[in-house]
Length: 169
Image (cartoon, rainbow, N blue to C red):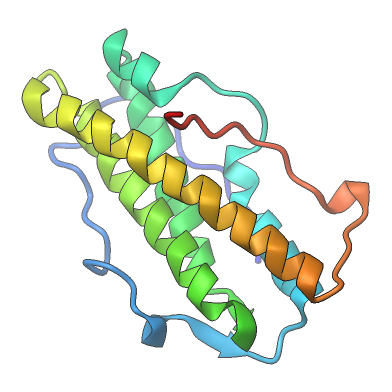
C-alpha cells in the first residue's frame, strides 16, 4: 500500500462524490490470513492522511471554511478506500466493518457540511450526525485496541499513529 496525498482542493465539487456502496457489509471485508500485527500496521497506513492536529470539522462549518471541509472529506474518503482493501484477520472483521462504515459516513457528512452555502439546514443536520458518528468511531477504536490486547499484539512507538478525533461528550 502506498500513501498518496490528496490533491489540493481549489473549488468545491458540483456535488458531493458518492460512496461506491450505500454501506459496506461483511461480505465486502476481505477476511484473510493476515496476522493481528500486519493488520494493525495496515490500519495505521490507512489512517496516515489524518495524522497530526487539525481544526475541528464543526468549527470549520461554523466559520464557513467550506474548502477546508472538502479537503477533510477527501481525507476521510481516502481512509475509507484504503481500509476497504485491507486483509482482515477473521476475529476482527466485524470491528473492521464498523471502522470502514464510520469513515464512509464521516466522508459523506463532511461533504454535506462543505456545501453549507447551498443547503445550510442539511449541513447543520450533518454536523449533528457527524458528532454522533465520531463518538461511535471512538468506541470502534476502543474495540480494535481491545482486539490487539486480547491477541497479545504489541506495537513499537514508531508503529503508532496520532490523530485528533472530535466527538461529542
